[in-house]
Length: 582
Image (cartoon, rainbow, N blue to C red; front, side, top):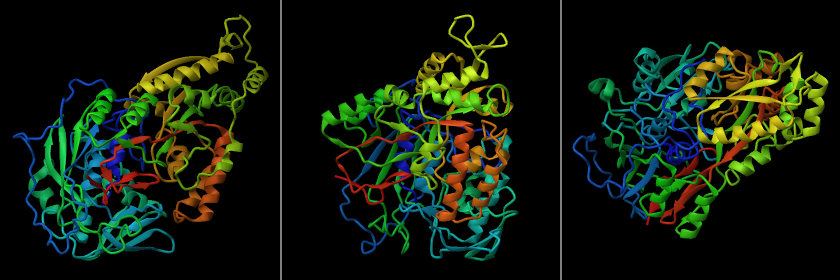
């Protein structure tokens, strides 16, 4: 049960986050869809009000028996419906046939995973009851909870787990986009030891596999419903909500599962409510423009939203009906990358010069003054392995130093046109970024700053799918991009040399960094020795500057004061299981 993903579907997927529906498979162990910071696409239509009557082409789940009054928690149960706007709606809720971030967030309400990451950032058992790694970390034995049933009344057991993961691996790419965790299961065998014990076998140490098992796309499905309904099945799982209505390009409605309860010890330091969710329905509405979403908030048609601009903050503050939870960060950074594999950006002094020429604070002040802070490291502030001490290893804004380095390299403006040349060739580099509006804006400021020191820039904007196709070819010089991954193995995914031509879009390669990162793989997530290695790796990465970290995004959300008892997860956003609406 991952109710906190309601906010992430709102925040990451609304105004400041672009609507990406698919992520091409580019490398093994590819993480979730890399996020954007841009407004969503221009809409075709806008709803004028929240629909209240279900149309005829809805999907209706089977009725479930309600809990006995003695066991159901009805404290403050005055809620009926939580309305959330999305900039896009998924075309499928099959966790094995989509990399759509919207689908992942909605599945987080319907399905439970074997493992969850608690508010203290520790991995804990959810549908699993416990686990044990072998001494060489190549075997993971996991015991499962008994007496749990799916929303179709069939039992949860080892057969369901094996069915789910076998189906995940069997999904052919030809039938559509695979799950974002598909590659994480390559080379992994799952064996049933008894009805409530399974064993994962790896070809190499994979302690980070627990991260995969906590991913929304790793929710355990009810085999009976999947087999009976075929490729267009409804996702039937064990979560706090189930699918009630789904109208394409209009809205999706989830209804709480009245048979749901939290086992003893699960989310013990997070939730007081142990029974069904207090909010009866969650309605995801398609509202594609930022302006329409803000107006819907102010008109009382939505209970919560994500703020896009300082004007939004002024509007909601003036209304007096909202509050903004604090301390929520996106799980990644925006970076200025250099093609490490081709000239001239494979030259360290040139990369250093350009890094010195970029004023991160000016970029943020102009475009995201209330929503970002300068990034100092490859990992964001909320991820294990981050340290403020890393600030001293990067390259601060220093125009004189940038000019000095360019002079020493022999790049001089001999014809007075403002662009430096060497051997008669002007220093004009191709900067690749997304078609997201905010990236266009950020790029414009960075281009101005680089032009001031004599570096010419040719800007090329592509959809995110296009960037995923272009970067493995190496046909670019510079890259303004980002990632979203809430675990420290982001360094392995995006900067390990084994990911060159894949998710390592800069083509960075340093054997020393690889060795440090390899050592972290079998270590526990909160191991201090692991943190020390991650910090060493980041120090070297900052000095090598394949990326120049630009900004870390802070989520500024607004919630109607009628919504009570929210919790804040440091990496995932707002938690709603205790929440209710007055």
